[in-house]
Image (cartoon, rainbow, N blue to C red; front, side, top):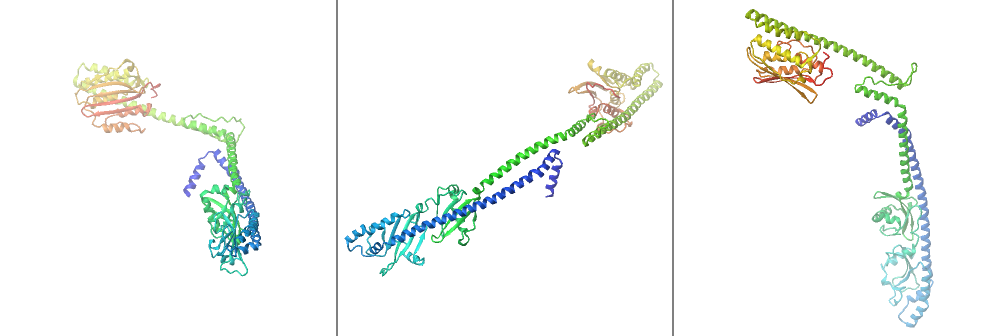
Length: 611
């Protein structure tokens, strides 16, 4: 949890100011508005639920009254039928004894009973089940008791005061409601009493009661009080069609929650992913419940659309709020963006990227103006300090270069004069004059520093004078090969950058009195770097790793003479001081085969000087 909180804080810290303002406005305005809206919708849902329950309860009561009224009609029909005492007496007599008597019964008593049945539209059939072996079954209103099932049902009727209703008839119960009544006769001589049954089809008895739309999306069902799988409802009702195969599960769950003593309280059940409410009344004579069922999804259809409306309105408000915050921040922080833009330029190296405040001499400005003025002052101070640092570095490096120049000149001059003096004393030969000419050229070249660069041809001429002098002085036969195009000979290079390399080859490439061929070649790499290769076929360097390590040292420590003199490290440091780390020397050598020193200089550099 702590890690999540730290991550949220870091994300908030790194967010733009406009985003922070938008978040603040959202927390202060949008979220409270959403909460209040949702609370209002919940209150509306509660009120809508109460109204729906009141409507459903009223409808259930009305259904109960209408069902009891129709049950009273069946009872009236049965009472009227029993008033036909002549009909009842005849079906309990010997109907087979006299055919003329049976014909008169058909024309009188039976016709009267048949008219009574037809006068009640709700009655579909009226039948008597008589325990009379002399009964004559020629009409559907008269049956032997043996046809009744179950035959001991008369005992149940006797326990119910001689009359009872069944939501599903015993004989034809799938779509029929029946009213049963015991027919008691004085002096009855048979074992089982007569049962009268009045049947009415569900479609007739309930007719439009279960088809009525309550306006609250309630679904009316009449359900058997003991068997939950036996119920009557309108199969074309929208609720039944929508529920589909889940309807039986819904009705079973509702039946499990029914309570005769708590019929005033609605029942809430859940089936699948839906919640359902049920209001009911118990009809004792019918041993059935009349129930109104509604889905919460349908009841709350209005508030659910309100949720979508609130979300839509909130989204629009947030969008407008975002646009407003963006507009305000652009106006408020426009000058701050100028500060940020100046900082980006400074980061790219433009130290003169100051901020124009537009303030007068005595005008203080606001907080952002104060930041801009302070920032401009800081840039001025940075430029002043950087100028001081650059000047100090230039002074130090110029002093170091002049020290290097003096070390190189004095080193070469003293060695050359000492060699000529010793040779003159020993040999006393006129050839020394030629050596002195070469020596003079060398001295003039090394001592006269009119500029920091010379042409490659001048540097090459100085190297040729040096080779002639060395051949004379040491009796060697060094050979210099440099066939370069004229345009390269005019290219300016740092003075005395090639001579120490050739001197190193003379001293280390061959033994005393030996012969070495020194080749100088020039190439241009990628039109960016000038490569001057000085190759000899001498013995090669025995200390290549030490030389390479010295050349790879990138420190700015002052160069001091080693036991072998200044040499290659001196030249390498000089080149890097003025042309950058990409310039300098590199050495490649195979002992006993060759040594190649490569000088890397910028090609087409505008100013190769600056020593």
